[in-house]
Structures are given as C-alpha cells and as structure tokens.
Length: 398
Ligand SMILES: Cc1ncc(COP(=O)(O)O)c(C=O)c1O
Image 1 (tube, rainbow, N blue to C red):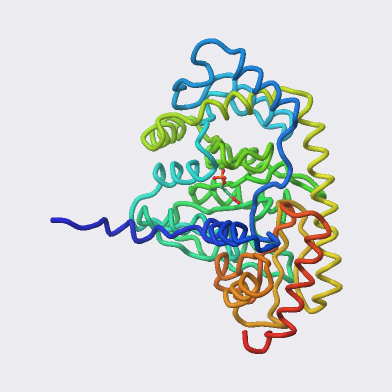
Image 2: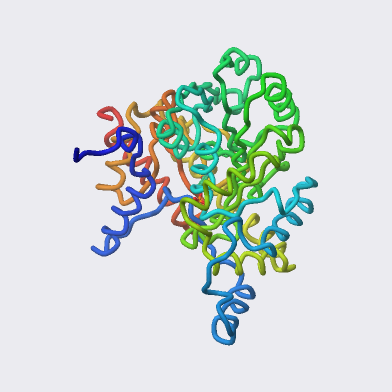
C-alpha cells in the first residue's frame, strides 16, 4: 500500500535552515538583513591551510582528494583528532575510538540509532539545542525535560536531575559550551553527572560542538570522568569553520564505536574526503593555535559588544553573559510574550534575523537567541537597536 513511514513525521525542518532560506531570498531582492540567527562563523579558515589545499588540488596526482575513504574516516585525521583531544583536553582517546562523520548532525543521528529502543527515556535540558528532539522521537525515544533557571546561570541541579531518572532512562544530553545559552558546565557538576551515569547506568551524550570557543574559564571533557558512559558529538563547522563541507566526529567507548561506525556507514558510506584532508592539515599545523586565538579574541569582542548593546537598548532583557559558544540567549519577557511573532516581525519589518526561544524551550517562550559571530560589531549593535525599536513599537501586541 502506498504511504509513508509514521516516524518520518517526527522530522521537522531545522528553524535555522528555514530562516536562512528566507534570508537568502531577501538578499536576492537586495534587502539588507542583519543576520543574528546563524550559528555559522563569519571568519574563513586560515589562508595557509586553504593555500595548501589549493596546491594539492592542482598538483596532486591520484585519487587522494576524490576517492572514498574508510567509513570510520582516514587514519591521519583520527590520529590528529586524538592528538588534539590530548593537547587541549588532556584526555586519552585512541584513534580507534573515533568515528569521523559528515558533521555533528550525522554524529547525533548515528548515536541515537546506536543506543535507542522505542520507549527509552532521554533527558534533555530546557533550554537546549533543537536538533535533538526530532532525532530522539524518530527512534521512538520519550523525552523528559529538566528545566534550568536563568537566575542560577542555567546550571544543572543534580538533585533535580536524579528525580527524573527511572529504570527506562537511556541517556542524558549535555551541550557545553551551550547552544543557546552560552553557559559552560563546571567541573564539579560534570563529575557529579558522570558519577550518576555510572551509578544508574545511562549514557551521557556530550555535545562538544563549541569546545574550543571559550571566552572565560575552560571546557570540561565529561569523558574524563565516565569514559564507558560518554558518547561525545563534535563538529568542524565552528572551528575551523567549514559548515558547508560537513565534517565532525564522535568518540566513545570501545563497545559503542563499531556500532556507531556502522550507523554512519549506512548513512553516508564515508565522510567527505576533501574536508578530511583539509582538517587533518589544520589540526596538525601550528596555524591552528594562532587561528583559534584570533577567532576567540574576535568573537569575545563581538560578544562584549552584543552584551553592552543589550544592556543599553533593552535594559529589561535578562540573560547570562555567555562564557562560550556563539550566542546570547536573552529573555525578553519584560517586553513581549511570543518570541516567534517577534522573530517574524523582525524579519519582515526590521531586517533582522534571530531564533525564537520556543525552538529551544518550553519555558523561555519570550526569549530570543542572538548570534554574535556572523556580523561585524557595528551591525550587531545596529541589529540589537532594531530589536529594541521593534519591541517598543509592537511589544504590547506580541
Ligand atoms: C550544539 C550543536 N550540536 C551539533 C550541531 C550540528 O553541527 P554540524 O552538523 O554542522 O556539524 C550544531 C550546529 O549548529 C550545534 O549547535
């Protein structure tokens, strides 16, 4: 009988992709739109690595830049990732425990394909990255949410987390540095969560997409505290900044890796070879640290400008100063109720794109996520000024 899968209805168009499509159209119509929505770096990868790749593309013989690769990813890249994790995080992850994927998105899909059975419970924080819900539901998982308080810096309260654990709990997803709030998990909380995962025997899916974009403090690698219970999701979309080339990686314990590899293999056969070669050169070059220092300093000053503009133009906005990632999550409940209507209005009438809080949260429905990595400081400030103009003109009706 002709028809469709019941589970396909759980998949939804990503809100950022949807807004990007509208923004592209407005750009073609020559409308000036300030992009405060995308989690896409505004800075190109380092020229030295681009030149190396360009030379190889022209001079290279054979199929090294064009052929299939092993589905787990080329060994040189897995070795480079392993070295990187040791150098930056002090953790020991063998190249055998790393699976290169076509972006973090494939890593997320492969992870839940590997661990979930229908009826399993997965704990998501609220707010959290919107990418997880559809995937978990697609595989029949049931979502339980742990609400986080802005007043407490969006910190995970481990006692409250314990109350959500049942004998059906299969996994907890932690995104740190966080999208959308920019909060960074502290070591004691990470350790307490790791201990809980070991005691109660559930997976921690640790999303480390923004692990190198830290403005204060440091990133905690939860894997260190519970290596048998952590599957980590990573991406090269943010650093070195190649989202359109689709490359990321997962790492985890030895019993999970062959299954993760098979899941990824079924989906894409192998990750894009050109991106694998490019990132291998990047991770192995000293340019990486210079570039990282440069982007972190640049994004920190843009973050500071965004925070200052929010305090000046929207004094009733409530937010934490993000210590990592690319975003400020500003609760505008002092001005509006409905963040989706505000986002639509901003796009149509004020030429600004933001992501509504409803995409990340059932609690923070009046919040918006503001990205500070795409636009220049002047345009970030102008964008926030326009948001203030919109809420002062239309706030009561939203
Ligand atoms: C927290 C988080 N995880 C995973 C991803 C997926 O990244 P990609 O598929 O581009 O590697 C993103 C993208 O924005 C993200 O913000």
